[in-house]
Image (cartoon, rainbow, N blue to C red; front, side):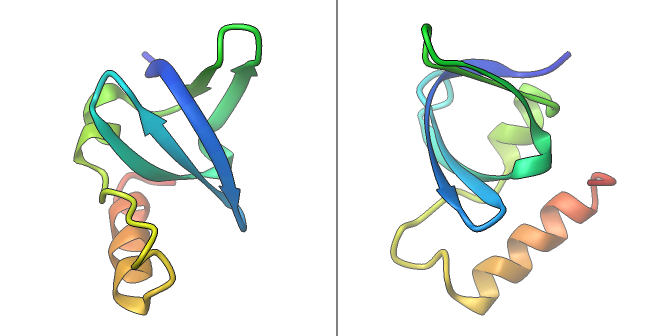
Length: 82
């Protein structure tokens, strides 16, 4: 079941930084995981489970360009067949 939540999204290259209020964290999601955006309700629907988003590396505006963060992000999502 796709996860959904009240999120604000910011585009970063081919990824989106998404603030998930229900999970209390901000994560960077691959653009290919976005299934649809409901602009009226400010909801982003993605092809990941709530657990996958919950366990994803947290987005940090100060380190998201660091190679180590990018490697962690790539390892996390590639391990899920993304």
